[in-house]
Length: 316
Image 1 (tube, rainbow, N blue to C red):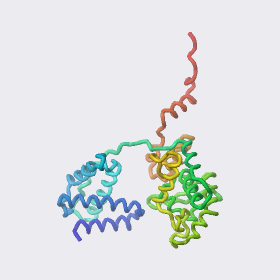
Image 2 (image 1 turned 90 degrees about the vertical axis):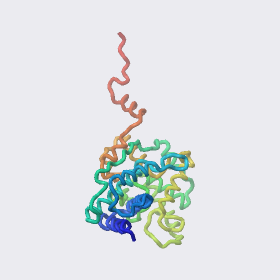
Image 3 (image 1 turned 30 degrees about the horizontal axis):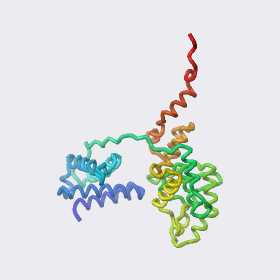
Image 4 (image 1 turned 180 degrees about the vertical axis):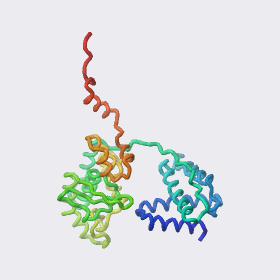
């Protein structure tokens, strides 16, 4: 094992044991650091002590220059910034533990990430999407309950996949969710989603669980056809299949339902701090991106609120 591989293994142990990163976050760090390792090897840098500030800048430029088959950027600015976070974490760990003499990333600035407005469906599209699942077979009940839950609560797809029966309290309309960094929060569930969950857990889920071709995760809420916990990829498929039925394929993903939940709540007057708590954002600045409004809504609010917005001018 090379010196670089040894240090990366120690950093990986630190991330999982000391920092206690969630599985998805840990895998993201590993993926970015594998890319970094390949870059260093390609330029002949196998001794981590020879990595300098210029090397890190070259890595960032390398990522920004990657293109796909159509000549477009392969990695979004946010992906490049995330990779730099992983590289910084690695070098900072090595320097703080005395494994390397210095941290070459200390003065490297993060690439600028353009701030975009989250894509959200309008309320009519949401109604169409939630009505797209037809029939009352076990899978249809599951798909309907999943869609209703994602929109009603704004939880992440990984949080929905991770739900166990003990996490849901349908009598009081609450879900206990394990979010990023293993932070737990409780979120309310509206009547429509609660009804869909009640029907599914009382009927459809029992039929799926009866298959029992998988003995794993017996308490999982959302099950696959083998009676085991459903995967993230399968949830994506459920959302996109429903979107296809109502013509929303190109702009639909589970995360769009999360965006839509937050946007619609703020549109109807919800407090920003409440939405922050609902979504499990560590910083309110993350939630504030949803406060951007469309020109049509801006005009509608202005005309409803400004005392002279609709007043005709007096004749002279």
